Image (cartoon, rainbow, N blue to C red; front, side):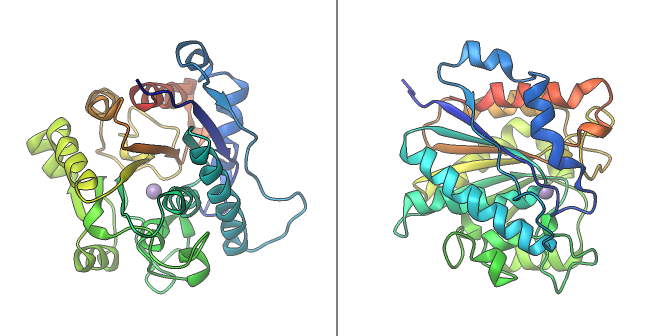
Length: 292
Ligand SMILES: [Mn+2]
C-alpha cells in the first residue's frame, strides 16, 4: 500500500523558453480546477505554493532559471523527506534542472537515479551548440553534467544522472550536436519510428526496465510536446507527428503504483494555445495514470 501524498508544485517560470507563456500554466490549471477531482480520489493530494521569481527581478534568463531551479530542488527534496510524492507542473522544461537534483540529493551519492524523458526534442544542447540559446533546450544535458556550470551544478555540483539510466521517448526534432552528445554518452533514444513499429506499451516497458535496473529509483519527465499537437495544442513548441494521449496514458499505467517511481514532472503547458482546454484535461489524465 503506497501511503505517499501527491503534492503539486507549480513552477511559474517561462524564462527558459523563447515565449514565456508557459509561466501561466500552473495558475490556469489550479484556478480553473482541472486537477480538483484528484483531491477527492487521492487522499492527501494538494497544491503547494507556486515557485516563482521574486517580483521586480530583472534577471537574465540564466539567472532566472538558476534561481527557480535552486528553489525547486529544495522544495522537491523537502517533500520527499516528508514521504510525499512531488508532482512538478511547469513552466518550461528548464525546471528539470531543479526537480531531478532535488530527488538525487535525497538518494545521496552512493546510488543512481533513473529518468524517462518524454519529449519531441532532445533538450541536450549547450550554449555552444544551441542556435536559439534557450535554456529549456539544455535541461537534459545539464542533468548529465554537461554545459554551463551554473545550470549543471544547481543544488549540488556535477552530473545527477548517468546516461545509462536515461531513456528519451517520442523524439522527432533535434540538432545533430545533441544527437552526437547523447550517442557518445550512451542514452537510449526511442524515436517516433521505433515507437510506431513496436508500440508505445512495449517501448515504455523496456524503458522502465532500463531506468530501474541499476538505480535506487527513477523519475518521469513529460514534456507535453511529446504528444501530437493536432490533438493537444496547448504546448510551448509543437512538432507534428507525436504520441496520442490515449496510447500514452495506457502505457504509463505500467508504472502506476511502482514505489520506485519517485517523482513526476509535466511541463511546457501553454494555456494561451489550449483551445477549449483539451490539453489541461490531458494533464489531468496523465496525472491520474501515474500518481500514487
Ligand atoms: Mn523539453
